[in-house]
Image (spheres, rainbow, N blue to C red):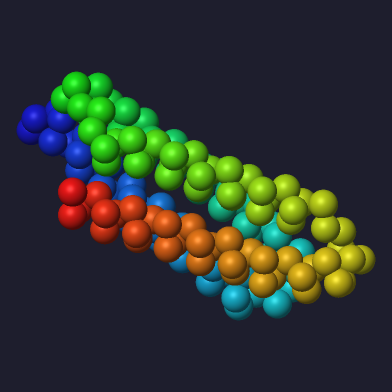
Length: 134
């Protein structure tokens, strides 16, 4: 098997895994009623989220360098990866300062987290659609 075709396959596969992680996190925020349990689960998934995002960015850089391609779609993917990383970091930073006694902050965090995950999934779907059309 050609190394570059396996890189393309890994890149696309990791996009699906990344989207699955986003869906799982959204499901967690929507269904888990105990904030501490939800926060622990999201904390564990945050590292997996960033590993998946890094793998997507890394395989994309390898493919772009191999094909000597800095096309418009590559220029769109770079800020998308950075945006997804930054928005997830902001969500995590907001979650980690909430104490078990801050009931109001816990209640306010859930709609915020849902909004963040909807934005992340929408960005991923829109970018995938744009990339496939170019």
